[in-house]
Amino acid sequence: MNDTMYPVADIHQLVTRALVSHNSKSSNAAAVADALIAAEMDGQRGHGLSRLPSYCGQAASGKVNGQAEPVATRVGGAAVRVDAGYGFAYPAMALAVDELAELAPEMGIAVAALTNSHHCGAAGYHVEQLANKGLVGLLFANTPKAIAPWGGSKALFGTNPIACAVPRKDAEPMVIDLALSKVARGKIMVANKERSEIPEGWALDGEGKPTTDPAKALNGTMLPMGDAKGAALVLMVEILAAALTGSNFGYEASSFFEAEGNPPKVGQLLLAIAPGPLSGEMFYARLDELFAEILGQENTRLPGQRRLALRRKAHEQGLLLSRAEYDQLLQLAGV
Image (cartoon, rainbow, N blue to C red):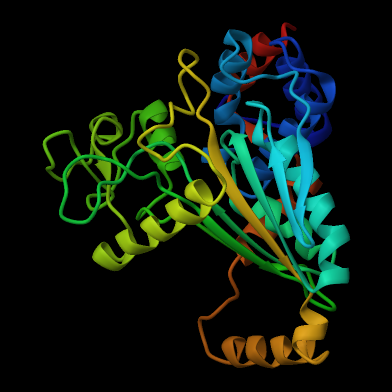
């Protein structure tokens, strides 16, 4: 066995150093490292360290502007437009969260439209930041094409993740995070890297036939969750995340993985809601009643419980990486 536990802080330092050495300023590198490490700790490896090589390659080539400074512009009483400047999505998301955390308690609800953006990673990561500030968070994001319209055979839409996080009085926020494909595309990327098969029903190959080969799946199309209903949800998110933010549609966006080409220029729509005033200050009590009813049944749990357990374990024990993964990290960091 070549797998080893490494302290989280050490891995964070290496990720930050890798990005800085690939033409990213330190503040942007730290924001990206925060998100990648958080995903890795939560067991969401498709949005974790596996993304670092492509991020570094794109920053080095200029496809991602690692020096970008996101800019927030108030375009309404409770509306903000954030220009990511063709840089990483994470610094722009952090800016949007700060803006919404200021506006939502005063206005009751606030919205941020992010444009000229990039891959935003685990969608739940961003809405959890809002929930930690006592706000209900909602996120809609579009991604490069991977899903065909229902009945079609040509990919037009991305896997288009959505996420919701709700604050709790005496517990960690509850976070729901899902892609609208039957599985996140990042999981197929990980399977392809590890040369393992994927379950049938996740994707179709380039000829529209079911496949368990991740390489063929990546050259084909993803299947939407819920079939025709899921395809309708994918369209809804495409409108909210791209049309409403003035960003590229999935079929116009370049790959999140390849170093060459134009910036993806995708969009994200982030909403924050102050739960107290709208609920007549009953939100937390009602939430506890609902969760008690759910947990009162056998074999039930709230979304995100496994993620929180993995996070606690990572804090205590570190991150488990193979020797090859750690060596690649050292190479990217120039160590």
